[in-house]
Length: 440
Image (cartoon, rainbow, N blue to C red; front, side, top):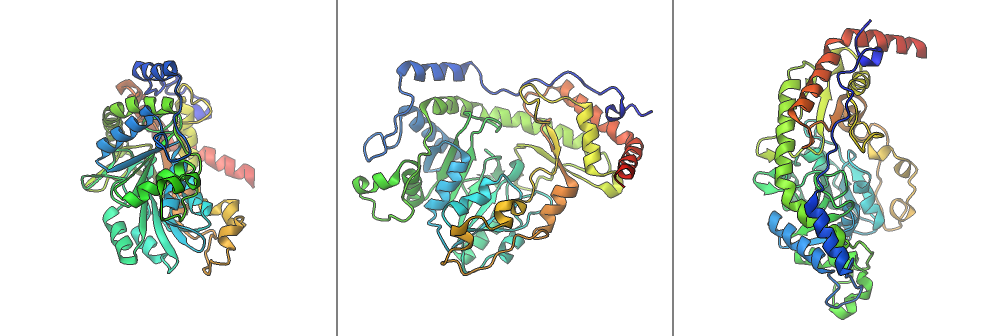
């Protein structure tokens, strides 16, 4: 009988991993100051001194702009809101197309739909899982208005190639940096290379304010429109004497003073947290990369990977079992984390191809797909992005064992679990064969 926990053996570890909590006394003190002030939000949806929000929001924006070396920074209540605001600020509307990634969180493709535009999915690079510039180029039409790239899992996109395509076709470049704060491409922070960038402060990101996001740009026109979209722009343009009214109708995407106070303290911690993530990831990549058929993350020359998750590729033809079977065995060997009991910190595939969702399969957004101003034809059929589908259904698996809270002992347990499953793969083959027979 195998000693694999999946098959009834004793797991490598039963003690739950320590909570990865970046919130400390500094954040508590900062929030209490805001609570004591009684000023939890200072936004007013009209053109006056409070249109830009309260002192904590404005300080957080200034601190973020300084840290990332940009002229303009605007806080919002989520990265999703930021994506929507940036699509609007880039003057995208009905009849337009936006190149998007199929291998990301769903908001990246929904954002164009919010403004009546059509998302067009390009395929990904099989090494770094960001949009493949060749596929971007192949999907550009006369209706293309922008490229919305995602620096997925913490690795930068090939920005030289993307910016060259954008210049050639006169396109805006929107950078979704939700998973890549302070990731760099040839010495530049992602989010500062294209026309506008968005960062996430959701609770499970590198640093967080619970919910929240930051938008950065060096373009004054985009910066102004983001501000208007964030805070009821239609009620502001007259007093502000704004002349360009396209897409300046607004929403309520405002960050609170408490969130901003937390963000100010979290930003101070970000460099150190990233250093620990990178060190842990490098340790695991070096050792697990010695297991034939387990391919650790690629880090392209001139890039800094900040590891939102550590993304591996699995080669069934070498190892001899399906990736999913191997990962099921891993889950049995290691526990989850405190506060994450319902979410395993290792999993298969990362993100299902977005175009397979019902909203695209059934063309459920009439104002985009069936808009009289849209004269194009877009496909969302299975097989559209073969690399994405192969990565999701067959090869990619991710884990979060490189979080800053993981000690050397924790990492050793992770390595022991991988090696245990790998060396018992013949037992997994027999287990897999029995499962297949039961399905016949």
